Image 1 (cartoon, rainbow, N blue to C red):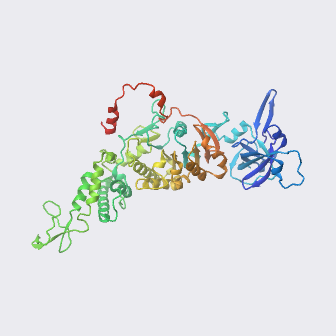
Image 2: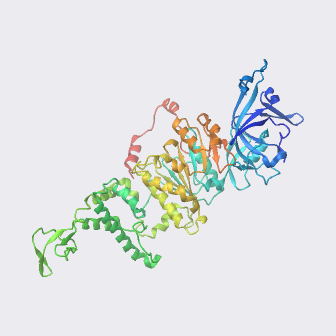
Image 3: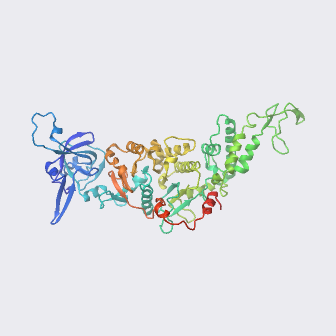
Length: 604
């Protein structure tokens, strides 16, 4: 195997410490201002710069392919004769400077491949002392970046080297968890849109669920002119039936921060009632769907909130019992509980008995009922009470729409949840519930490889923060479980955030791919340095100075860590900055505040 500069090494290794190496640059290269030149043909030369921080080079000669490594420049410096040996008694009066490069070994040449460069991640074996180092041509770097045909999608150009396309391995991107981080205005939304556009274009039958808190991405995935098959769910079309919630979610949504100790009896009664109603529903659908061995509180079975649950709880809250045997004291004419008789005896089946309040029920549901009625009447939560989900088998239709399963001749590839008009306290609940439903569906899927599912979480710091509260507890729990177990069930996630240091580190640490745009906050930079591999410290130190759309890509989806200029999406998401100067120079005409206020009021 030959490389262009095989006969022109620029230096040799003089120190090895773990994966760090020190390279002494040859004097002729230093004398030529750290440049090397190679004649390709008459009148056509190619120049190389030695020691460009972040550049990839080869350690070991092509003739010794079994000990070839790839390094990345971290630092280059000029060392004076005094710095070389400050205690020498025989120093020359003439300065003898030399150039030293510090680099990290990031991989090695595939031992099975003898005809072309083939990058393998990790150490494998260590480079040899005095091993010669060679620069790589743009074509040779392109060979390192390249993936087998059909396995990758191009996301942009290597930063500073415009002719080098950079591709990501699609299965290692979608098949592992990934994270995209970048400050506001760094090009984060455009990066997300560009990558997902390429994914959807090359995979027309994909299954992606996208949580969009600010309605940015609808413009980036147009149905007709863009050719994307999108199922957009906005606040009007958003339906998540209350009976799909497990009891933990039901309690979080409907009861909030109610005192669990004081209301322990009320919550017990609520549980028993819901189970009883679900068992009743099971009896109705048993002939159609089959026997369910044991109906539990979390089974996604229908029950009527207004016609069954609330009336039953209101009735039980007035439960009374006969004093003699503690049997329910029921009025045989109305079916309601008899009022307490105090110390007065009243007739009962030909004898006299007293009616007492049942201390385990009577009044124990006051706060529970109040909370349930409050949520039921709050228009912000009307998505929990859709009219056309009044039977358990409507769950089929819900999952087909959510997972982009072809149904009724309609095929979609992307479901976008537009959460922009929902209150901030409601949004994390929706994201948590939908994520949990997706995960549990994949958990029960007998063939999880048949329908791989990809979840995209924009503004993730709002619902998987470092510090949990009552609103973010559930989404953080569910996304954490997907991060730990999702891969084996064919469900993976893309975490997107502009505030990396506010993210749950446990979830981010499960990510295998990193896309980092410009980040200037010191706390965010420290967080990124914690989660990125050590050998990327040099590249990560450049992150505060990245241009818009410039991105450090690292992880399993790329052959080697690379600084990339992401290809701009077409069309772009609705995330561009507002042009204050141009707008403020023109008179405001044809503007009506009523339109905005009516939307605020949710006027139909």
